[in-house]
Length: 132
Image (cartoon, rainbow, N blue to C red; front, side, top):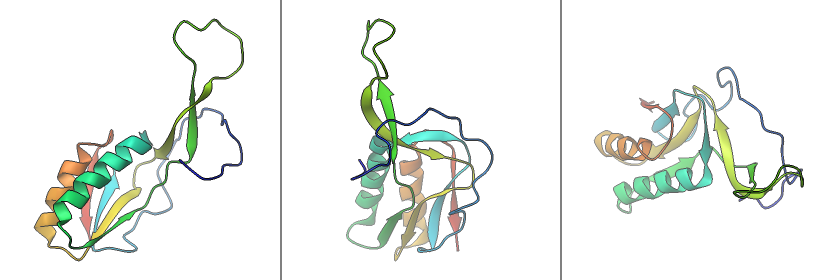
């Protein structure tokens, strides 16, 4: 959850096109790049991060290149129409094709590949392994 956002509740939108920022490896030697468009929740990012950290075994460094700052609202079941917009339920990041999601450095390529393979199972989008 972000510390501060400009607006508490945002408009819904669909992200179109391909990513033009954070498309290259900037920090690590290996990366996990998205191939699709999807909202990735904070819980999904955290689940993937935990899997990667478990594979590192006190070696290497991980960079998370996305941050969930988009609030998603939700109205409860059987709530009648009207009554305004629902309360903020969770936060997401809108990933577009070409976006670098995670970066790793300081470990062997096979370990990084295995870590990213398991982590990609926790994410709702198709991804690919990239190296410098």
